[in-house]
Amino acid sequence: MTEIFTDLIGTLAIILVITEILSGSQLYKRIGAKSIWQQYAVTGIVGGLFGIYANLTGIEYNGAMITVRDTGPMIAGYIAGPFGGIIAGIICGIHRYFMGGITATACIAATCLIGFFSGFYFENRKGEKIQVWKAFWLGASLEMFHLLMVLLIVQPFDTALDIVTTIAIPFILVNALGFSIMIAVLYFIDQQKKMVAESGRVDAELETAKTIQRSLLPPINEEYPSKHADYKFDIAAYMEPAKKVGGDFYDFFFVGHHRFAFLIADVSGKGIPAALFMSTAKMTLQNSLRDFRSLQEAVQMANENLCTNNEAGMFVTAWIGMLDLNDMSLKYVSAGHNPPIMVHDGKAEYMSFKKSFILAGMEGTAYNENTIQLSKGDVIYLYTDGVSEASDKNNELFGEERLLKCLNKARDGSPDDIIRAVNKDVDKFVAGYEQFDDITMLAIKIK
Image (cartoon, rainbow, N blue to C red):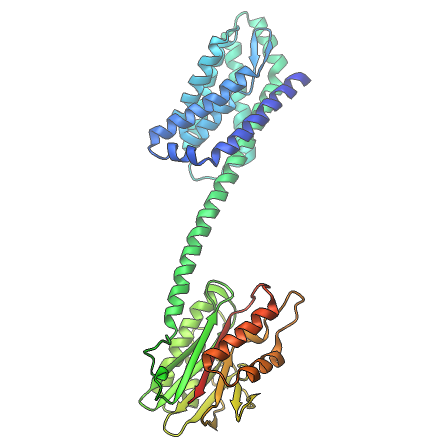
């Protein structure tokens, strides 16, 4: 009995390896996917070849051939239904018949019927997750049926009974075990393929979402008014989400003929939820800033609207400025956001003011409106905490001091130059370490 176990398990191991290779084979998928009948044929032939290999490596005992042949038709039935199982059973059954022996007739009948029964069983359970223990008991039942066929067909009965009682335990256990392992392997590979396909689909959707999100941000090109030499200010902006999409955003637009609104904001969280709330926050702020003359009232109304139906409990930090182009006065509100850096008289310093509460945090919040006077050469640099909290491999933060030094070095440059300088310093600091937060910047310079 030990010899039977060893031989059957050795053959089974080789078949399992081949099964795993074939299940991921592009050639097999191309052939089998052309039509359902070609799938039946290809699967049946492969299952039949497994059975033939098992025949050739089996153990002869008292005129019988002890093999794991039945696993071929069983697997063919699992993959391609009754037709695939029967084709595999016929192929390896005929081969077994011509090998001769007193069990040849019983084996060809049993093998064909086992392929059919296996296929019929799984055909009626398409879409179900087949549990390993169920596959084991199905395999064991089919092998008991095989031994019953031997008892019914093989003569003399005493010889049939001797064969069955001698081989029953290893024959049933190894075939059932092999079948259940194959089912588990095939199911695992199938799930991996689905996960890869789903991952590819999600990646494609995220790329589309990224494109859509970027299209929501205002473009800056040569046609933008601030790029004209006679305009009163120059502006530049940058955004790079930590994931495909993120919650940071910036915005700028004219309100009437002589007022220019610009802002930067950071939504709590990352990824798709933050991106969805970002689009809502952006449109809400823009509509409020256009509808209300007072900046303070506009921000308060935006907060009320964002608090409504905010079941996810998300919030936004934002810095919102309104520049009057007639006298270059700047009114601004900070809703819990990082203080901007202002370059004035050739020196960069953090702006000092009293912050107000975040947006979407609590209804009825009052917001402080501040006013400063800008002059030629002044720069307002806005950023999200993805800049100051960028970290290196030792988890050290880039920090506000490094950011201020960078602005002091680049203070005479254009808004584009300033943003490039910050990006360069941050990249040098993190030295390729993974970006954990969205990075967004906006700079405006008075001409």
